Image (tube, rainbow, N blue to C red; front, side, top):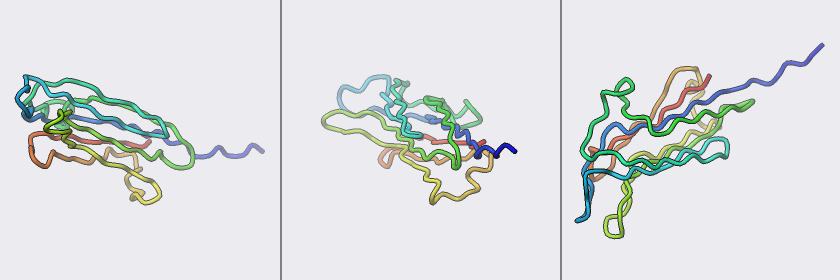
Length: 140
């Protein structure tokens, strides 16, 4: 009799920019340099996109905004642990401004987060609430 295969999980991870604020510094222009990454199952996927400053993308993707990273990880036994990080790239005088920095570790995360429904964390830059982003995931 063949043995049952271990449970397989597909963890779909997306990073969204909902809104951009104003660039800082005397060299600010009309765009924001959005940088970041997602790490899932030991693999890092980078984000590097320039978006117009002071722009709200909430009209896209059911209100979450502009998708700038889309990653799927397939694992067995448990969904993959993952991290998502976003920041508006600064310069030598202003520094980077982080507006998404979140992780899910399935050893401590609520198991309902793997129930097939979409889940997300929403965050903003502390000193400019116009920079908003979301780390969204769905486990199937």
